[in-house]
Amino acid sequence: MPTRSSTRKSTTKAAPKTAAAPKKTAPKAAAKPTGSVTAAAKAATAKAPAKKAAPTKPATAKTAKVVPAPVTKLEPVVAGPALRKKELLDTVALKTGMKRAEVKKVVEATLTMMGLALQDSRDLNLQPFGTVKINRERKLPAGKVVAARIRQARDLPQNGMDADDTPPAAAPETKTAAE
Image 1 (cartoon, rainbow, N blue to C red):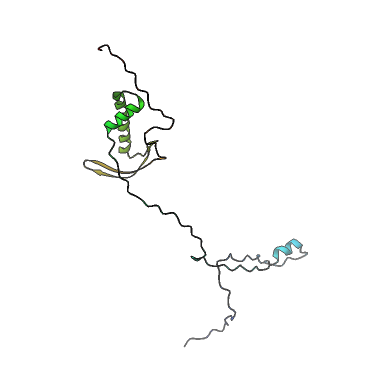
Image 2: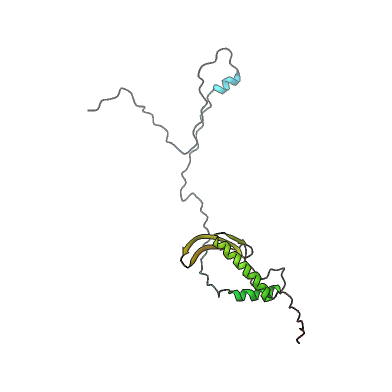
């Protein structure tokens, strides 16, 4: 049979705990000062009157305001025909007014440098083309597979020219000595 303790339990109920800030109490003085006590010392050791905490309501789904986000339907992108090197060379030659043989040297060197950067697992930041970030790589016996993300800062004009660009003037026809 359990024995009874000689201490009495308090019959007063404690206030329920809330999420309110804890009460601040003034520090208790260790010993009473001797001699004259100034008003500032009395004010420092006096207890501040206890403030009642305002009752707080728990946040519920009804009280919290939820702003719905607009839902945008993702549609699959249908890729157009691939841009081949021949078409790229012709387009750049037309846009710049340079000869196709000169454009070919520049484009080949550019593509080689981009390929070397990807081979070294380097990200590319080539505006207005975009930023290419490598996500993961996988080495295979025949080469390497690179999964990358390309991000463009803004939409480019459909014709490939900026608003301040003008189409190149047609190169004047020059007669050769053979004609």
